[in-house]
Length: 139
Ligand code: THU
Image (cartoon, rainbow, N blue to C red; front, side, top):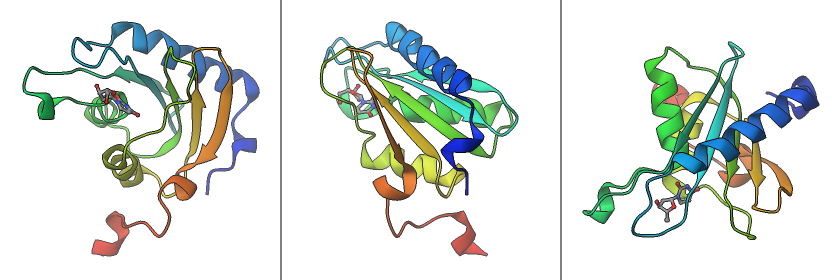
């Protein structure tokens, strides 16, 4: 399991900065709720994403899934941490679909939630998605 201790405070700060930068690219004409996500992989690479909405609302993609899918394209498979940032006062919380997509590449990564005041809340994927199903069930 990845414990927070394995990730330096500097790297966590960098991950937070990248998530905050990512929400500035969000395309959110319908919700006006920009979200940025930055994923940290075992390779050391950080890959970010933002939410991109669609006039056919259900086609919207969340920031977390955008970051993970883009990372998969770059060959990443082992997720260490994800930071999710929003400009609003309330902390963000990854939706159920994104939790399951994060779970595909980590059994229990660090999850850092960042609000618009720059406050952070640390949690873990195993807390957000207990008793989860994942790829290893398929043998
Ligand atoms: N959204 C994300 O991108 N990530 C989250 O963690 C929560 C929800 C997006 C989807 C949609 O564009 C907007 O936020 C409102 O639901």
